[in-house]
Length: 71
Image (cartoon, rainbow, N blue to C red):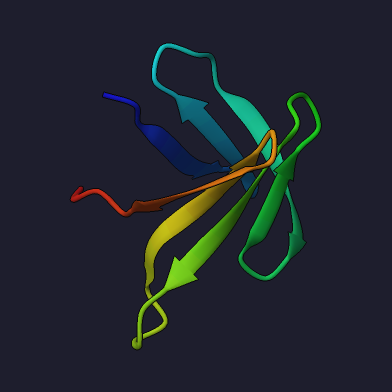
């Protein structure tokens, strides 16, 4: 199973995919982040209560939506 963890530490955002190391991502707009080490971006999705409900991974011309996993 592929999982993508998005975490915040000390005011910085990080992503970590299953079986890979953690890397920092950078905000380009509200709910939009990108990586400087890999050709990917993430768009956060929000529900009607403005809570993050999922994301879309943009990489290599693919746009893969994923719901937020239960914590």
